[in-house]
Image (cartoon, rainbow, N blue to C red):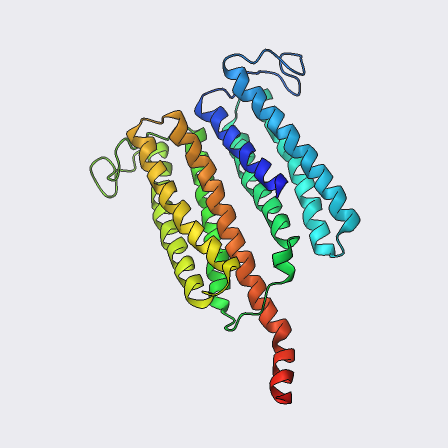
Length: 302
């Protein structure tokens, strides 16, 4: 949980680096102006601060992986920890390449994409090593549709975050300068890549909103007595509302730093919440299968 929380802070700080235009305030890597700790002035505060938080997350991940390999009996969980450790190493290298090659779009987007994937890994570790995971009761109604719906919603949110990363790193954040309409229309003229990727992100937001609402409604209907499912379902709807408001605020404020950065962080939080809902929905369905013979035996005995 600590590693997941630190990763969320790292995503916020990373968004802050981009929002403040500080990505190349420190032009060398792995040192900063040839030092371990340069003067924290101007954009260096954001960029080097980002590196410090990243280093902290890397150390936490290494400790978590070692601890998991030592204590965790389930091989799948140990592999998950190994993937997390590998991901943070690759992420550090991508961060360095981004600086050394002067912010190539493909590498910057890959860096953002891997950040969200790594966040999903450590959130998954926090869930499956928690007490609530092992004590999850069987669902009275094994809803395979909810399992597929929540998994699909999580995947769509991830793709939406990738579209947002492309939009940010290609400077297309204000390619459509009005909201809720687009150049005064529902569908604007797609006459450039910037307008196209921006409008794709807006269309993706509509799809995400529909799927999050459907997932939450289905979860509340099927598992209304289980807080493991109900809490992430309700939180996902709340985060969705905040995220939509932040998206509008970015346009209306002409990409002010706070809403732009918060939009990145809340997007990550929505992804993680949807993932937790998907994991517990699947876990409850699996528990139903595992417990089914016991339930049948108990009913036969009765």
